[in-house]
Length: 340
Image (cartoon, rainbow, N blue to C red; front, side, top):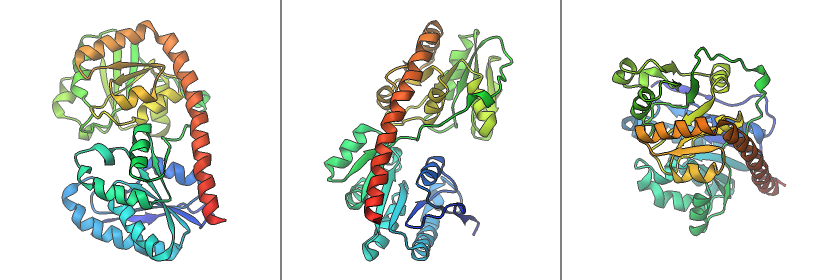
């Protein structure tokens, strides 16, 4: 059995709360762990995101979860969902020990076909959690209809010093950074078709090229660059160097982290016309149908309104950051009340 070693932040001293996630890594969870000054434990075996091995690895991960909980003996456990079996293991431990848990539910757990069958179990676990974290008002209302407490906490705002970034643009076109991972909900083919109709723009499509369709890589027009997977400074330099940021999804309730990154740098956004995105980005974005024609129309509209949209997105980010801080303070106060 190949496993990802159990890892925890070693700089933290707090022991009354721990953070647990059944994945080899998870940026949002790691960020919250740092903000709470809590150790984060990544518990994962075998292959990642391969459903056919789930029945085998979940047994091992459950045993490891209980071992960590017994060793750490926290007062509060912060656990992510999905998979729902991680909070289920935490619930069983908490039921026996009187410990409290926070369930951070990522939105695909509530609407994706893969996890839809677990909604009754999620509802049960949500009602027993000290509080539930969700990223949209619609999901907060859903949890409250279940009789569960919920707080809206999206991906935390980032403090980015853009003075350290470099302009790496090499084209004389309107550069557009496309935040992409080649996931099933990201329609790359329509970007390529739109690019053929927009010679004045250059599209930098991010994401691990090993996950891309060979036909897309081989038949892309000249004004499309597949950057491969970018990390850290390379990622931020690409976003910083672009005039706009594009992020697409076919999921109606997916709040795209890449769009939030672009907004952080004041970049006007080109987004799929989906309810979650329209709610979260009321200003500074152009919303497009997921068709080549929709993208062409959207890019041209953004080009005509670039300065106005850039100003709007900057103002919106400041408002959302204040709202996030208030909600995070509420979470911290709930944790402190349990530990006092």
